[in-house]
Image 1 (cartoon, one colour):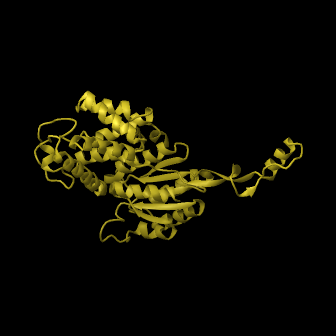
Image 2 (cartoon, rainbow, N blue to C red):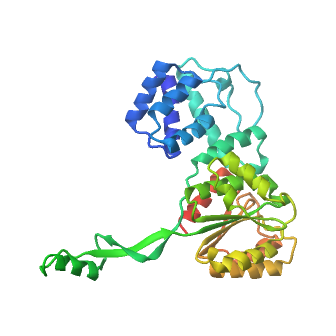
Image 3 (spheres, rainbow, N blue to C red):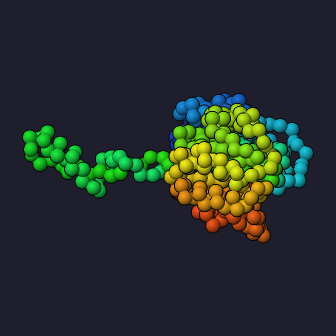
Length: 366
């Protein structure tokens, strides 16, 4: 296979991983369209939009993945002059900067890109450069949050299970009393509410942007079932801002809504406010509550422990995401963490895109 084709097929695989139903036939049509239009930026983008996308949602994902996969490259499809080499954990090899002639070198570039993206997924968000943060922003589109489900009081027809006596009897009456096929039923399910509490204090400032982007992904996946609040010197309800479809507009709206970025944090008082105004009234009852915080508490840790216990009682599951949890040598010795750990169901890491993907799975399985 031609090296350029391998690059383009790599893009179709990335698009499929982002949730677009790219079939083998569509992939071949894409290659043919690029050959017809030419391997330029405009030609490659137009070919992808015409052959790989089935609707508006696919078009949006196409643009996000296109930016993440191609825009930072200097080979296909956008030729650029070679950039000076920089030392970075996520820097590309010099072969990429030199461009390619469509031979085996292009395949090496694709493999280097995959390795580079994988390294970036595991990097600590707080230590990324602005350019790396921009690339990571595009990779957030690969996260696919799923709402957990709970059994509802309603039933639905099913192939087996409990006999639905009422439906079976009605079917028999329609046949003038003749025996009818036995109808079975099972309990229906509905999405379980997810509540995200994001610490935006000074000690969490390096992670706040990434965490709000993660919250935006959760909100877009289940707009009616996800509620988001920020924790700082006060509690701020952020759900309306994060319901904006465009992630950049949502982050800007969130920034305008939150008045206490990078300030202090009073976790105990904030949890008390949440439980008093929203939690016990139904928002947290039976919900999966996820707290993103490093546990630094300026207030009374006894109050924090009491509120964490109360939250655990009303919630279906309490998940605590700590950005230091997955780092070598970390021990949960902060007073705030020690106070809440006895009441937490899951204590997980949250410092990189890879750990955010794990958080997505923890929530989906709750």
